[in-house]
Length: 200
Image 1 (cartoon, rainbow, N blue to C red):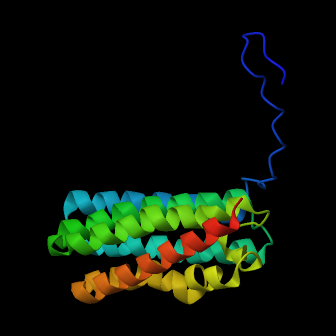
Image 2 (image 1 turned 45 degrees about the horizontal axis):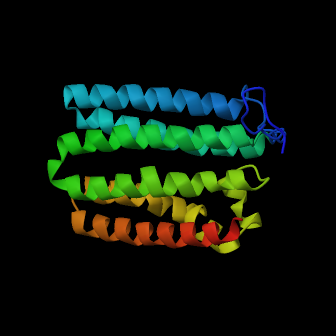
């Protein structure tokens, strides 16, 4: 083993990083814009206690999230960098907008906290697991494990992950929403354990 000038073991040369793709793409621009609009509207809704503005913020977030994904596929501009930006932006929007809902519906706090733990922690780690493989993002995880992909990133799974819970809160169906959160959380834990078993 070689040693450095300070007498510590010398580090082996770092491997070259995987390519992440360009930042200046249309999908990334949409991701940045929809995040900025949703966060500004969400913050304003909390400050003014205006539930209608919260609804507009959610619409900006969801429509923008659909549009950036569609553009990435349509323009063949899916990148690993774009996938990470999308994941981070989703969490920023969801955390703030969920706080806005709680400002109007404090009785939903147990459901909201459970949802945030599931989405902002479990789902974030699971979604970033794609970085361990040479794929572009979670949408390509079917190449690694079709079962984990189907349970977490298929269109139905994505809808259950966020929209189902938010709709349940908005309709006052807290018990139903909590059941959805618990079920989704259990799927996330099982999926994370399955993914961990695939890693060295």
